Length: 485
Image 1 (cartoon, rainbow, N blue to C red):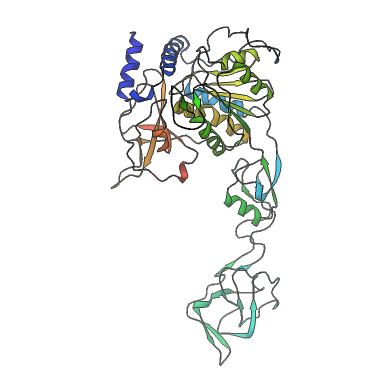
Image 2 (image 1 turned 90 degrees about the vertical axis):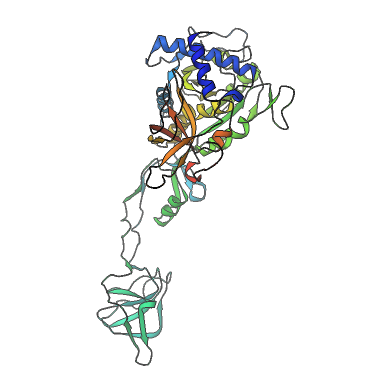
């Protein structure tokens, strides 16, 4: 056993990953990746990658028996640089713009700033049910006269000093109105036809003046804003019937592997496909329009046909990214003349992930490892920043927080570790706690997580600040106090 293999074994034992490498092919693949990753790290250091053509463009209808192999193994990129490459790839072209009716715009990204088409409010309006009054009191009033919302301009015109009129919330305030007195603060003397107040009157009280929220032409939200229900409401109030939006990126998901079952219990060396059901909803949460997963097995010709016939903006494959006898992604990309932008990332889990461009103006491909948590790592490392660029979304803001435990690290690579946020107690600071069941083949930890901690090589001590990647649903997830820490 080499020194590097011994170090990796020690890390795995410390992380209790005994159950995570339960497939012979995964074990062999991980050892090969570790050796290759360590060698390329030593040789390349922190060099930026050169984009590598995997081979000359081939006839798309030819067989795959003689693909052009890469000239040399591509270096594994540092994790942060791989994310930067993916983000740049997503921002590589101009964004399309479509106008969507409000009822279809939810979840899209604004292609242009949203400017108010009118003053808000567009007239002086009452903020409360009560009485509009002019001048000092007491005030006379006319029985049976009320100003209602939606009834148009005030039928009373200007309100003379010393008079009052009933008014409803949202109704236009008459000209020369001094204030609105809430119903519960008013005293009506019906016998004398007089209105008085139990509280002092302040000029302008409970009146929303025209333009209080915005003036016509004011920018309400910038381009790149995700259209939420609140943005839809604001747009409607500001006069919009449709919004300029960036179309959602279209994504095809191709699930590779003859060992995968679509239903039922695992048996006879076959396992359930966990990624097919997971990737579609996850990618939709990242703002994509996703087709149903296609299960291709370990069939190079089927993979080639799926890639050449796709009209998606992004193709996501699962498995087949290493160098085993049935790992067909690299040979197929070579046969198609694809450009490898990222070929391996110095991150665990997920080392053999890749990013390719199938044609200069064609779709991108993100190749995810077959192990489920390794695939999640690839999603957040490559697919998330790429889709953000394609959809016009702003990049996820990086932030750091304390980790409330020692977290072992890989000897050379970044680790992505599922964590859960916890509120500080008794004056303590908010922090994250690492979760167990974080092996590359495991989903139990990530299912309880609301983020991933970015752990540098060598690990971190309890109380250290670490960068956090939020999961797409994290804001809606209660902070978990479960059995996973």
